[in-house]
Image (cartoon, rainbow, N blue to C red; front, top):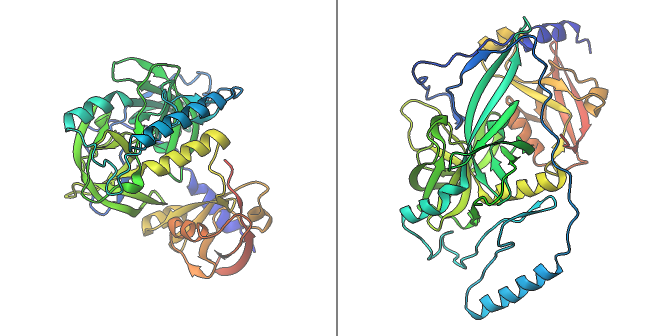
Length: 431
């Protein structure tokens, strides 16, 4: 299949030169048709850096793994404590009292109240008590991102978000989109002290990222069981709205469970809440009436006249992803095609890329992948997967999520007015 004409047109329009961003004098007016957006800070400032400055070198390497110490005494102590608690008629699930990291594993602090109806059980506290117990566990995050225009002049944009402390020695969970592409990340604690942060692991699919700061004696959040949440249960959100109001608390209820929404091309299973979520709340905590972390805030509705539609990643999902990132560097068992996708959903965008039809297009092909060997190139349109017509990258990923590593899928490729069916074996995604 000849791709020259199509490919040349695609590459000419795929990467337009960036333009510097200027902070708006007033908050932008949203459009109710825009769908869901990340709850990050839109008020970003830009300035021109020295064009002759040294290039950004990227992230620092994560700290080396430490040798694991024997946990036999700890296991024996936990058994004894569990037996004693059993005699008292209650169940305690506290993995490590100090909630520290051992080697590459974060030992989450969590309490099982034994109640099957609602995560807080009978341990609900007043709102003021909850705030007092959780505010020290939420941090402010600021980022700087460096970009270079066609004239080799560098621009620095600043952003803001929130995070939740996982361990007393400085592991923090936030959203991937809060730190994605950032050159520097800074964490500010509730007492005003600031620390440079090192990204330890990120996962774009679940929008989870882990940071590490060199600090001790922090106040880790206590994890609740998000599977026990019920609609109508009271929750509090704590975060850094607008990037300048750290420690802000808003209240509401759980509006829905397992809500499937599409955020920037990713289908996500999220908690829905009417708690006020504003730009800058991304990565902050959603807490129940017992002061337990039940969600990590990551999205809100983005439309005029829409209120009370906020979303959070369930705590159980966040915990699983954090463990995977720390132990393996990525989430294992996910399928990979070797392709990245671009949605073209309107005529203006189609004209910009000089394509004749709307749909989902291949934006890049991994070098050495089977997709490359099959002849798939950037600019190809994915018309169907396994015989199911697709028009967005979210639909493609939804079909792929039904498969496991090693399965084969049939991709129907449209190029220059012709289509072809190609059989592709799915590999395991490794960043």
